Amino acid sequence: MALTSNGKIDPSAKQMFKINGTLVPVPGDADQKEYGDLIRRVIDDNYAKRFHWKVYRYYHKEGSGFDTRRWVIYLEWLASKGIVTRHYELCCGACDESIAVHDDIDPSLIGTEMECNHCGESFEIEKNSWILFYSITPQHAAEITAQMKTTT
Ligand SMILES: [Zn+2]
Image 1: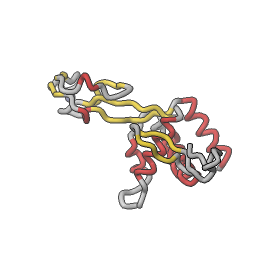
Image 2: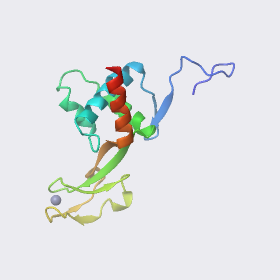
Image 3: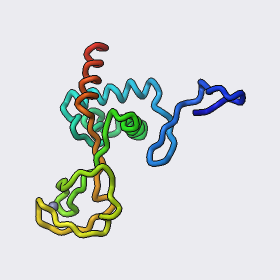
């Protein structure tokens, strides 16, 4: 939080939060409306349990000028508030199937061999063997859906 010279909170300063240790501004009202609408569509279409940040592609065509950076900041902001949860799926290097779901990338597994229980191939785990997915808790999804019904 930025303070003015007399120690008061500067009302013009944007609130900040961290993504992977980097401070970024909290999404403003316009972003919260635009991307909040997108989140409601994600919930409406039953993707709340598991969605990738590229889910926006179902709603915004390539080249539509959709701002992916601001969208990811919005998702991470929801994650920082506990509204969405991050999951890392460990995926097979041969068949791309999801093998396990972790809360975070596990550095101790990087460089180790794993046998895929889908295709039977062995592969070496790399940092990018994990794919980040988001989910929205059923409680939050219900709240967001209820808001949609009262505001539209
Ligand atoms: Zn496999």
